[in-house]
Image (cartoon, rainbow, N blue to C red; front, side, top):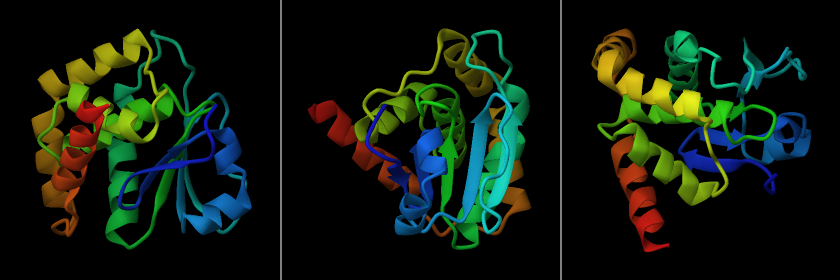
Length: 175
């Protein structure tokens, strides 16, 4: 199940339920926000800002309906100098899908490239087939609209997200 949370890009971490309940690990990584995506999520620590999304790890689960609010939550956290942990139970399918959707929105990379970049830091991630289909659907339908929304709703991003994802991709292709 992995050895703790993994940094994907500046201010964005991916992990599992244990990582979200590990006060020491949260402090070490300066986590301020937690996006919980699993069955019946609830806040654990009073000093963290949470977004809780009830979702099962099933191909039939609609995650696209939550993309916009989750992307906004992660982005606002990062722009305000915070760090966001995105997690589900194992940190492999639901949370990975949300992280990939976010990376697609803040870069020009495809969902496949963003997933490969995430695999560089967390090798066992594996969104279920339904979530992969939803990432493809998002890419084909709402992605450009959400990119425009993100750019118009928030002040310009100081982050070098495309460069960071590109660096992860080049590391991934070397493996």
